[in-house]
Every structure is written in structure tokens, then in C-alpha cells.
Amino acid sequence: MDFKHEYLLNSLSKIKHKKYELYVVSRVIFDLDDWDIEFVCQQYVKTPTGRNFVDLYFPQFRIYLKVNELYHNSASQKELDKHRDQEILESVHLKPFELNIFGMEKNTPLTLIDINKKISNFCDILREEKRKALAEGSFIPWTSQEARYDISQYKRSGKINVDDNVIVRRQFEALNLLGANYKGWQKAWWKQDSTYAVWFPKLYDIKSSAWDNKLSDDGRTIIERRKDGAKLTDYDRTSKRIVFGHQRNNFGKTVYKFLGVFSTDLDASSDNQSVHKLEAKTHSLNI
Image (cartoon, rainbow, N blue to C red):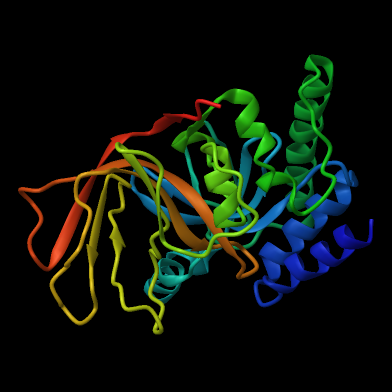
């Protein structure tokens, strides 16, 4: 239980300057009072219209909650949200819930009594989701911080799918999903066979990196180039790329997210940059 207590304290510390969000999130967790249910604070979610923060995410039920405060609509906050690097979830198959702490007509805060009623109703929804999952035999209790990164869940299904938010903590785990047997790997490229290679591009700005890679908002295009504008020499543009994007999770730790299988668009590419287009969102593991 110790790691969960530490996880809770670290999670709440991230939102200590947002009083209503802190109140709602902490009350949901304490009202729910169930340490078998995992939660993630300030989860970054990609939707068809862009990327947004959600204040509380429950991975076992694919449910997320947004606490709507007025500051979310400010230009400065939107710009801050845009540039924060966090583990990104696809909104596909996720169930959204919103909790407004302001009255819609007078634009004034609701009383805590009214807010508490909304929180109680939301917790009842989560309890019902757990009850249904237990009845179906599909509920897996939250046992560790690493549970969500366990690659055995993908091995059982025999495939990886972008919509399933496939994320691993280490590069060699991604390679082992694809039939390798490594205990370590720290390179951005791994040639699997004559058709496929695995690519681990950094998709956020790192000063020490020589590369400037950009993923489009719809997740269908990756533009790859060097920061100094140099030509791309000795470069593979024929392999299909199984892409695990290098990202940061909610606590700043490196994770690798499956973004799909990409092919290089030779017509759109040049000597100085490569343009890779999404070819498939699902890839068979063949193991």
C-alpha cells in the first residue's frame, strides 16, 4: 500500500494551486475509498478536435472526468496546456464526464453541498462499473504503478492497436513484443526484417537532441528532419516503420507509445526531411 500512498500525495501535489480541482479530485478519491481502482491526475487526452487535459482518469474503466473551472478558457492556460509533455491517451472508446463547479446562468461557484452531490453521483458510476467488471470477470485490481505497462496484456491479444493506448516503459519491451529477446536497447532504430523496422522518435523538443520531429495533431503524419537542416544521408526510406513515440508520462518519466505503422511518402519528402504517413493503426505480433 505504501506506493499507492506516495502516488496519491504526488498526484495531488501537481494540482495544489487549483483549489476547486484539488477539492473535487481529492474528494472523489476519498469518497470512492477503493485502493483496487487506479486513477491518474491531469491526464493528457487527444480528441478529434485537439489535445486536452482531463483532471482524473480511471484506466480500468476507460472513464475520465473534467472539472470545469473558468480559468480553463483563458488564452494563457490554453497555451500552457499545449506545451506540456504528458502521456497522451486517444479519446477513442473513452467515456467522458464533466463536472461544472460554476452555475451556468449566473457564472458563480456552486456551493460545496451541490458539488458534493455531483461527486457522489460520479463515484456511484465508478462503483457500478467495477461491479459489472467483477461480474464479467474482467476486473483487474490495481497492484502497482507498472501494471499499465505490462506487455503481457498485448501478447495475449496477439496484436497492438493505436486505439488501445499501447505504452511501454522501455524500448526493449517494445522489441520483445515483436519477437526479440532483449534485456536492453537504447537506439532509435531496430531493423526487424526486410519489410519492417521499429522506430523510437522523440516527438517533443529536447535541447540535446539533433532531431526535430513533429507528429501532426491527427496522428497521421510524422515529419522528420535534423535541427541543423543537414541532408539525410545513409537513410532508410523503404522500410515500414512500427513507431513507438518517445514521450513523457504524468510524472516526467520516459514512456514509448505505439503510434501505428508508417510508410515514407517519397513524393512529399526531400533531401532534408522525410514525411511518414500512417498506413495502419493495428499490427500483428506474430508470436
